[in-house]
Image (cartoon, rainbow, N blue to C red; front, side, top):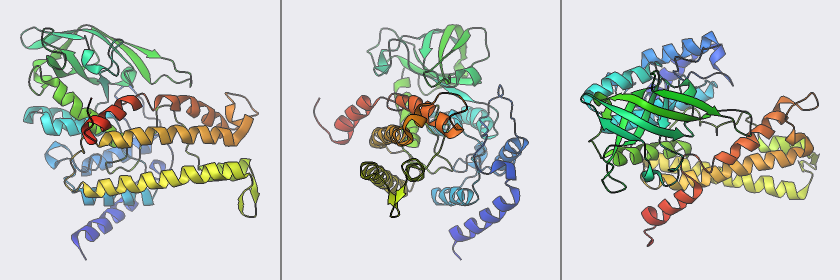
Amino acid sequence: MSDLAAFRQDARLWLAENCPAGARGPGEIHTGSTKVKIQNPDTQLWMERMAERGWTVPAWPKEYGGGGLSMAETRALYEEMAAIDARPPLLNMGTRMLGPTLLEYGTEEQKVRHLTLIAQGGAAWCQGYSEPGAGSDLASLRTRAEDNGDHFVINGQKIWTSGAQNADWMFCLVRTDPDAPKHQGISFVLLPMDQEGITVRPIELISGSSPFCETFLDDAIASKEDLIGPLNDGWTVGKRLLQHERSRQGGLSPSSARPRPVGVSVDLDVDEVARLYIGVEDGRIAEPQFRSEVVRWKMNAAAYALTQRRAGEENTDGGTPGAATSIFKLFGSTLAQERQELLMRLMGTQGIGWDGDTFSSDEIGTARSWLASKAVTIYGGTNEVQANIIAKRVLGLPD
C-alpha cells in the first residue's frame, strides 16, 4: 500500500469515528467569530476535534496549527470528508485568504501569533480594501495611516466590508506615504475590530441579507507589530492576497466545500428542478428550449470543474497560480449567475416569490439567491477587472 493510500485509509477511519452526526449534511459552519453564538453543539465539537488534529487548515505547517499535509493528502482528506457529507470544520477569510498570505509575507512572530489563532477557530477576519472612491481602481485608496511611534493611527472609510459586523480582526490596505506614486506608499496592516475608532454599519441588499458593511476608521489603531511586509510596499502583499481570494473563488485550491456566493442559500440541482417544474416526456425534460439550456449549462459546469481539477493537479507545490486565477474568477462568476437565472426561469412564477405560504423554502431561496447572485461578478474584482488582467498578464496584449 502506498503512503497516500495508507493516509487515505487512516483518514477515512478517523473521520467515520470523529465526525459528529450534526456536522454532516447542510448546516452551520464555524467561522471562528467570537461574536457569533454557535447554535449546534456538534459544529463546535467538530471544529475542536479537527483543530486538535491540525485539519481545520490541513496544508498549513504544524508549527502554526496546521496538519502539515501535502497537497495530495489534503485532496484525499477532503474527498473522504465529502464521502461522508462532512461539512468544513472552519471557514473564513483567515483560513482562505489571510493565512496563505501570512505564510508567505509574515514574520515568524506574526505567523505564530495569528495563524495559530486562526487554525484554532479563535478569530474571524474581514477585508478592508474597497473605499467609496476606490473600488475597481483600488490603488486610488485614501484611507491614511500616520506613524505614531509603536503604532499607526488610521483614518478613512472602507466599504463592502464583508462580514465586518462579526469580524474580530481586519486586514487592511492603508496609505502611509501620500506623496508616493499611486501604487506605492501603500501598506498592509492588521487591526482589531473591537476598538473605539471603528464603526461598522451593515448595508442591506436587495436579497434581504446584509453581509456587506460600511466601515469607518476614526483614529483607529494598528500596532507596528502587525505591519505585514515592508512599509509602503503593501500593494505587493495586497495583490497576492487577491490571488488567493480568486484562487478559492475559482475553485483552484483543494477544499471540502466551495463557498457559495454571498446570499446564496439553496443548493438545487438544475436538472432535478427542470424535471419537477417543466415535466418529463420520454425520459427527458419536456420542453425542448429548456432542455437545451439545461444541457448547455451542465456541459459548461462540467468543463469548468474538469479544468479546475486539472489546474489543481498541475499545482503540485501548493502555490497559488498568478494572473491565471482571473480566468477562473471570470468564468466561474458568470457561470454562477447563469445558474441562478436558469433556476428562477425553470420555476416560472414560483421562482420569484419573496415570502408567503404559496412558496416553498426552496422557491423563496431561489428568488433571493437570484438577487444575491448579481454581486458575484462584482466582488473579488469585477469581470471587467478580470478581463483586463487576463489580457495584460496572461495573453500579454498591449494596453
